[in-house]
Length: 227
Length: 227
Ligand SMILES: [Zn+2]
Ligand SMILES: [Zn+2]
Ligand SMILES: [Zn+2]
Ligand SMILES: [Zn+2]
Image (tube, rainbow over all chains, first blue to last red; front, top):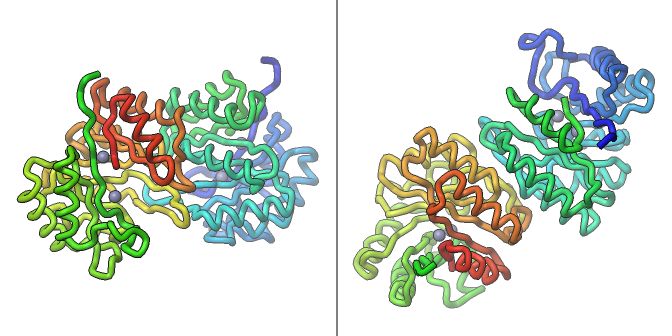
């Protein structure tokens, strides 16, 4: 296996604040600077959320527009992925930035529990987000928090809701959802290959202490890495 | 394998009405009669919802009490399982019948999508339902709509929230959740045995047209059957 691993850098999730980690980039200017450093260090994809000035999560398309403009200028060729995750907005506000035509956007296709609440992705919202991505030629990254989410992506691909072969990310280590587990990791890969072909790309994101473990497994198994 | 399969009869789900199926038992008297017929035909467990007079789902403890009284009298030795599912009530109302001490109650430990909505089982409600079952010595049947739900049951068993070894039911064929799939079915069984032992009991419920397929697989693989 000589293909170099693709590294996806997640600058600024939806949760950490400067009080927790002074290095977390909050403003768009800080995000562009931080992404450029990662790009120069070899990162291929940037997964981005935006924040309000008080550091709370935002889904403001205007902020996403400024971020994209900065990234296009400072990180030419980098793949820009915007989050449509549920922590940054409610309902269709989660997809208000899709007309900006980022290269990619995250897409949750099912619901699951989070540490203290339900991560809600109702079927009609999932279908609307997918249709917006289709309309604006945005490649979705399917966030697989559980096994059925890979099956849902396969159904949506089969019936045309996801026109291109989906790129699946396994999210493991979220409390009350799927833990970082080797057997599940292997079954996830097997299932992705079963539906999308032996050469289907996939990546893995470990939450919390076991992020390193999952990165190592993904690198060894030919997947992409999420930092 | 000579152990006879345990048959769990689901009289009256939360959805079908007499308009759809004139045979569906709605009143408590009809439910007792229908369960007795299944009991005499060999069913071991009855999984029960209750309904209002207008056939809408209910979680009224008074109705569950009359049902239990009738079943204890007419089906002596039958295992009575009450549903705490989310279609029949909201929040803690879903567990209001647990002080009646049925032998078993269904318990969803995660969230997932249903055909048109999110099936919401927030972590604090899951923990409250489990604590009520523990307090009243009710054996939970874990409703596994997805793989992570088996892992969640294992965590809850390990930390004492589920005192006894959980009895897991695989629910397959729900639109937008897990389909009826042979590979997943086998991985589910493997995972149950991994956490709860080679002799751990499990059952499988297929929704819709493939119910028969899943019953056949379960019978062949040594699981219990849900009608
Ligand atoms: Zn990724
Ligand atoms: Zn994200
Ligand atoms: Zn059962
Ligand atoms: Zn039920």
